[in-house]
Image (cartoon, rainbow, N blue to C red):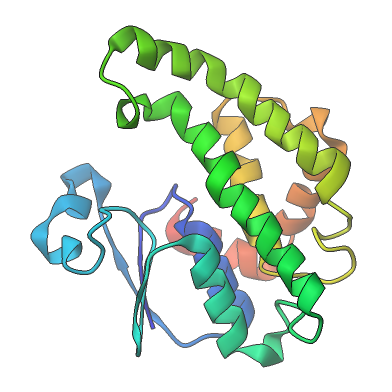
Length: 205
């Protein structure tokens, strides 16, 4: 496998899961500072012009939930998802889909309103509204989805690195994570994992 990444993006979740799985892989920086994500060479890999992208022996995956599930399924010995229980596995996918389709998108409205509007006033309004929406999302996670100590309870899964990265972005967005005690405890627990520390050091984070 080969992971295309940029530090500071959701690619961090995929990199942590690769570490958790003990997977063999290569990695290549897609440097946003030089618009490498728009270079023809990278667009040939991922026409969406985003990271991460994961090249496998059967093709390229470009959506985070799919990458996480693929890594877990191809490394079953790491027990990163409850494959023996169809409903529990669906809950993992349900949670990760919420992070991908709702939480991450809500956060993006603060910085990338240009994806949805051209009017400067509309972009400014989206940026102003984003924190309120993000807080609402994390309230749902805090009160109904995060079982503790890990997202799915006692079983550490591919949900945990994903939540960890988005929880870390609350600091960037100047949203007080301690208003969500369970989320904050989860973030701190993840921060103590040797694999997470290794990846953060590797990426200079």
